[in-house]
Image 1 (cartoon, one colour):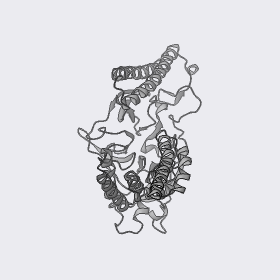
Image 2 (cartoon, rainbow, N blue to C red; image 1 turned 45 degrees about the vertical axis):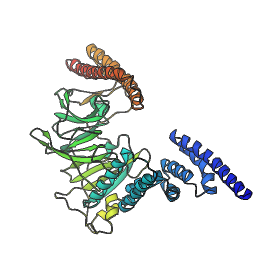
Image 3 (cartoon, rainbow, N blue to C red; image 1 turned 180 degrees about the horizontal axis):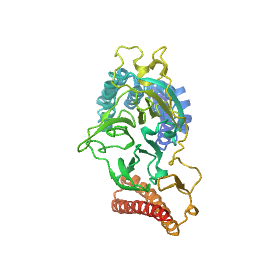
Image 4 (cartoon, helix red, strand yellow; image 1 turned 180 degrees about the vertical axis):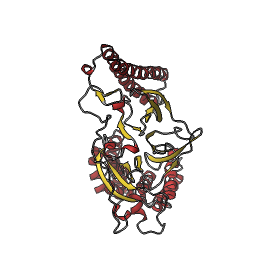
Amino acid sequence: MQKLIYTLILSVTASAISAAPVDEARKLYREGNYEQAVAILQPVVKKSPRNGNANYWYGASLLALGRTDEAITSLERAVDRNVPEAALALAKIATENYEASDARDYYDKYESMMAKARRDIPEEVAGMQSKLVLMENMLSRVEKIAVIDSIVVDADGFFKYYRLSPAAGSLVSGATVHLPDAEVAFVPQNNTEILYADADSLGNFVLMGADILDDGSIDHPRPLEGDGLNGGGNAEYPFLMADGLTLYYANDGEGSLGGYDIFLTRRGDDGYLQPQNIGMPYNSPYDDYLMAIDETTGAGWWATDRNRIPGKVTIYTFIPSDNRVNVDADDPNLISLARLSDISLTREPGRDYTLQLPEPGERTDSRAQKASSDFELPIGSATKIYHRLSDFKSAGARQAMSRAINARAEINNIEKRLNELREAYRNGDRSNSADIRNLEHRLDDARSEYVRFTNTAIAEELKN
């Protein structure tokens, strides 16, 4: 009996000792200190490989660091020790690896463990499972396309590598057309309108359209209308085909497999019609966006971060088809074609895929972004771009642009404060709701002032 009691005491003591670093690592993980959490737990899991909690938090920390292959082993050990969160993490990994069957098995294990522990399943798990159903549907109809090139570029300014002909329109930096909150905007060939994304009062991005006046200024900005177009998530990266009816854009809300997915809609009599997710291989469990198709050259592009290179995106160049043809569901290369893990598999042997494309790099038209300037202001037909106050000949234009610069600074200050208040609100502080509303009104006023002053500066300069 004394020996049994002694053994139990040692077991409890050992459990208490191992629990301390796990508790500390859990705290570090929740603070975002993943490297430290890994350092603390590595000797624990090595000494106690059957410790479920230690293996889970070790695996979760490795996963947060992008060390997925290492994480899987520890997460599988945690599943063996009935840690449901580990099964959930493995289901997510399997989904991201296009392993639908494995993901479904892990979800079943997760639900079984939660039921056994008499724990409620969080609402967000249903959303994760719906992503799996969407992925299964996409894998049943992967479009057969020919990807002729892929390049990895910096995420900032990536759109400069889309080699569009003039007939397809222009992708421009928002800053060059005095839309500083828009990363990229699209201008059709007729140069009479501009499409872009801007934040609404809730901080979500919505698709916008505006008129381009003869003097190059922007007038009458308004949200694009259509069922489901701006109804949820963030809608960004618009591209309008040369027919003036077909619109591609990206959205990260309902109906998206990953972060951003590419959607297609067409303009009807009363706005744009219900958007459709264009599926795989264009979309993935990661961010996919800015689909652009040039009917003159017969080439298309889209950007993605599916290859998980920090600060970079991959741009795929492909040849669009007039009619959709899907990969055979029994094709042994189905997953590779869906993931684009080997783009050579998408091409027919012996076929010449050479296209006559414009030279790569920054466009040399009037809206090319110039480095090291105070601002970017196209004047008149945009054959000239002013970068600093000294460029103006008109004193009235300089004064108006000076006020526009002040308005821009006010916008930046308000947005920074709004982000802080909204973050506090999301974390449970409801005392600042009135301040948020007041700042939103001030932000709208500051944006209107910015547009008004820049347009005034252009008009005054054109009088000379």
